[in-house]
Structures are given as C-alpha cells and as structure tokens.
Length: 269
Image (cartoon, rainbow, N blue to C red; front, side, top):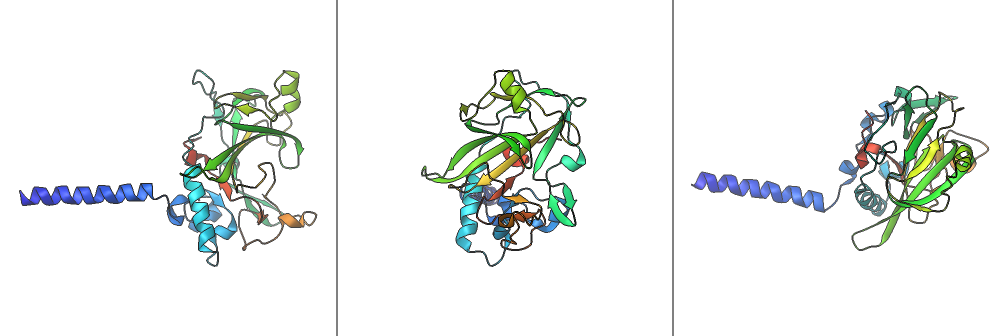
C-alpha cells in the first residue's frame, strides 16, 4: 500500500513539473535548438546574433523567449493545401531546406526558408495563406523579385503587443496574378485563402515557392530586409551586430530572426 502511494506521489510530482515547464514558457535553451550544429544548418530557429552573445542583457533574451513562445502557438496552414485538403506533389532540394548552407565570395550564409518545387517545374500553382493576417505585396525586391508577406500581431497573455509574425511567399508572379484579377495588397486574408496563383518562370533553379517565416519586434516593418551577404553599398546590413553570425550579416536594429516551419507544425519532408 505504501509503495502504491509512493508511486502515485512521484507521478503527481513529475506531472506538476511538466505542467510548470509548459506554462512558464520556454527557456533560451528550449525555445530554439542550441547552435552547436549551426554550421550544418541543424538549428531549429535562426535568431539575431545578439540573442546568442553572453554579454547580451538578460532582459532582451527574456523578451525574445516570451515572444517566440507566443508566436509559435500559431499552427500554420500548409501554403500548398487547397480547401479540400489536397496538397500537390512537391520536392525540397537539399539547397532549399531550412538552414542549408550557402556562400558567396567567401561569405557564409544559411537558407532561412524552405523552397517548394511543385511537380515538374509547374508555374500555375495556387498558394494559400498560412494564417489570418494583413497582406503586403512587393515587386522587384532585390532578393525575391515578387513576394507576398502576411503580418500578424503577436500579443502576450495580457493582450500586450510584443512582436509581429510575418511570412513571405516569394518567387511568385504578381503581374500574372493581377491579370487574373487577384490583387490582395493591403487587404486582410483568412487562413487558407488563395494569395497567389502563379510562380515566376524565370527563378534561378526553376519555378518554386520560397516560404519564409520572420519574427519582428513590435515596431518593425515586416517588409524590410534584415539579413544578407556582405555588401559595401548597404553598410547598414553589413555591421557585425553583436558578433559574427554564420547565417549572414544582420541589421542589428530590425527583427528577432527566422522561424523554422517545423516550429509552426509544418514538416515539408
């Protein structure tokens, strides 16, 4: 009898510990995978270099942890899944995986998104909103040519704005979308709504959807580029920020970083 009571007590204690861990939010270590394997692209999320520096103020780390824990409560709709639940056949090449290593002129950078190649280089592809949010469309962007971004405010448990969740759907053809009477710029869309019908035929490596998740501070602009290769013509993006970062250079005044789709319930394997 005493043994049974002891076992029950231990199980109750373990359950209480698990509940406390879940309710209290994630720590720096378990919100994102540590970067021991970052050179292999094995980390879960890619956050600003300031987050990983030992000299960073604890309050900043706590702010990021809180934001990430609330942002990742948002479970995404698959960007290729139609209203019937059908997802077309697609592939993700190794270089298009989240965290895949890239390099230019000796500068290291990792891919902060996932590239989805549909069928046999298909161009007529419906793309769907991953969550409810506000749309911005951009043409002739340096990195992506055309893209749609969807922004959503992230609030804490008290309803206070603590950041923005932004997804980018890039390498699409907004000109063909507009010719097809699809123009959603500055509109609100619902999860699962069609946001584009055309991939760009001239994308390097063939037409594909570049699906990117960004984490922004509350006052940041969701369409800004805040990372990239070293560029002497863009000194604001080539600052070392809080230190060297193998994912590329970083604008230290914009954004918290990039999210892995797995963090939001999407596994593209």
